[in-house]
Length: 327
Image (cartoon, rainbow, N blue to C red):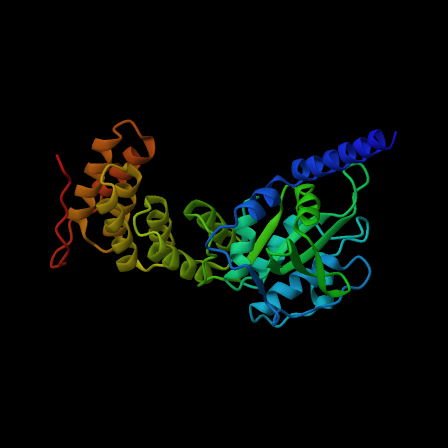
């Protein structure tokens, strides 16, 4: 009888362990084989602590990351922008938009817990969204990850009214998973998150640009071109940004660099043609649009561009760099 009872206890314990691994697979893998790039433990102790008032976890958490990046902002100020009384909380989309209103980038992390911890180890507090309840009875909550201890299997947060909230990683992963792993690194435009990918970063910059912060976004595009100098999408976005601001020499440099990387992208040749036209390099513009037309002969936009450029009278006395389209 005793042996049977011990067997039941063992089976129940094993089932609990297996369920824990199943519910927290990333934590299980992370602790089993920690990445060599991560420190065993780290804590960003200088991260501000802003205790939330009732239902103000969103404003408190966003104020925390903004203050950590040097922005002077208060929880009451953000509460007026974020808090929705009818929902008794703040929406994720508004958290992003409000961060941008302070000319900051709101970069979405992947759902990979290693990326989250990598950002923390690089000195970036991470804004996270959790469901502290159940899928059918949610308790939504925003917090800020400021540290971790892999040896103890713990993560450290600024959370609610608790300055240093320590919980095990597996529990955190479960609450984070229930929000589809929502996490943001909020940084100034001249700083790129260490785990950023080119396309996601450009998308974040574009959101900043379309919100009206054009000059700030331009800084981010230039930074991206330095980080990813071989990425055609990054270079084209940089060129477009410079062109919109009337910085035609910089735009030309961006598009010429893009062509060096990939000379078969018709849209880059098309945009370069307009830049050269703006710089009064008529012959160069005509050569660029000829290249674009050759690469994409049926593109209606390029055909329209060719019509526009063909109507421009050749400029005289303008010194322009020689442009050649490969045959």
